[in-house]
Length: 398
Image (tube, rainbow, N blue to C red):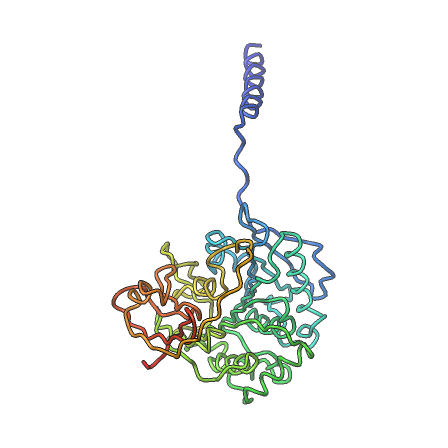
C-alpha cells in the first residue's frame, strides 16, 4: 500500500514539475538534424531513393549540394564519411543524397541510354529531387551544386549535361565524361582513353540539351593518378570535354601544389579546376581531423589524402553561407581599366595589400578567386591585375 501511494505521489510530482518547467519557458531539448529519407518527390522514373540533410535553423534562401555515392555505397555511407556534413553545418547549406537501387552493386546507371537523357530515367529522378528540395526547404535555386564519386561522378557529368539550368557548379570525383558509354563499353571507358577531340566531347554535352543558351556550371575534376578502377585518362577527357563546353583553353592558366601530392590546375578565371593526386587510387579524397581544412573518415573508397569537400565548398562559393538580401547600389563612376600589372610577393603580403583574401588558412586572388596556396609569408605567388580589384594567378611569373 505504501509503495503504491509513493508511486502515485512521485508520478504527480513529475507531471507537476514538467508543467512548471513548461510554464517558465524551459523547453525540452530539440532533436538534432539527421539524414532523413524523403518520399513523394516526383514520378521517380529511375526508382532512386532520396535522402536529405538540413542543418538546424537553416534559413530560407540557403544553397544546397547534391552528393552522389559510388558503386557498392549508400547515401548514408556518403553522408557519414565524405566530409560534406561538416561544411554544411559550418557554412549553412542543405545536402541532398540520391541513392541508387540497382542490384547487386547500387551503381548509378551512367551508361544506360534510358537514364542519361533529359526528361527520363535516373537523370529525371535526380532533377525532381532538386526541384522538390528547392521548394520544400526554401532553397536558393541559383545556388545548387552537385558532386559525385565514380559512378556518381559519371552521373554528375550526366546531370550538368542534361540539366545545366539546375546547377551552379559541379565536382566530378574519379568519374567519366558524358556519353563515353554508350557507345563505348563501360570497360573500355573505365580502362583507358577513348580518343575524341575536345570539340567532339563537348558536342555530346551540348546535344544533351539542344538549344540551351544559358549559363553552364563551372566544374571541378578530382582524379587519383594511381586509379586502376577508373583510369586517370578519364580525368583528362573530362577536362577536354568541359573546357570545350565552357569555351576555355585546354592549357591551364595556373598550376599549384596542394597537400598530399595534389597538383591543382586552374583554367581561366577559375571556371574549371583539375586536381591530380599523386599515388591515390579510386575513391573520394578525405583528410580525417579537426583542423579547418580537414574532413571525412578514411575507409573503403574514402582515401586519406586531402579534404576534397573543403576545396569544393570554396569552389562552389558556399564558404559564406546564405547570401544577404541585395540592396540597391548607386550608378558606378566609369573609370579607365588599368593596363595589366604584375605583383610578386608572399601570399600574406598580397592579402595585406588588398590583392587577395584568405579563408581557412589559404589565400585566394581577389576577383578571380583563384587559389594561391597557404596563407603565410613563405609561399610566394605572382598576381596579374587586369581590372579594378581583379587579379589572376600567373605561372610562371610575368
